[in-house]
Length: 158
Image (cartoon, rainbow, N blue to C red):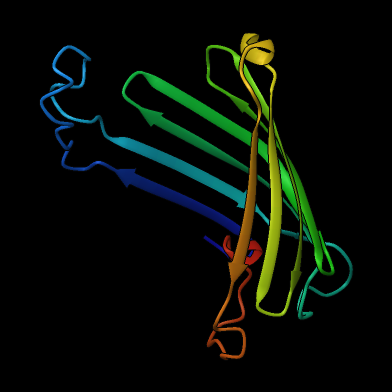
């Protein structure tokens, strides 16, 4: 939408694929329901310039996902200061609060390493385990010049 504000829409299962003959009475016999996601956010620079190699910024954002009768909303923010980044989000399933999501990581040259942890806060907190995720990103186009110097939604993942 602009150099600092972004919106996105994603669609999955456009052809509502059949899940096979073993799932006849599971309410999916008509095919896997369409899943759509809608997301957006704003990147706010920290400091006077956001044109450094590793700019510092904070980015509040949201994600809404829907598939069949299920709905989910994530609201939070991530931030980067030099090579260190982190974030926190809250996931709500529109029927109950579900999880707090924490992220911390490090970026250097073409590498990005991140660790996230989903803390279950719903009634399942004592019965379900939390989720850990480790991500290693490799970015092969670091040296390539771009025609337009915009800050976009994927900057944290490049």
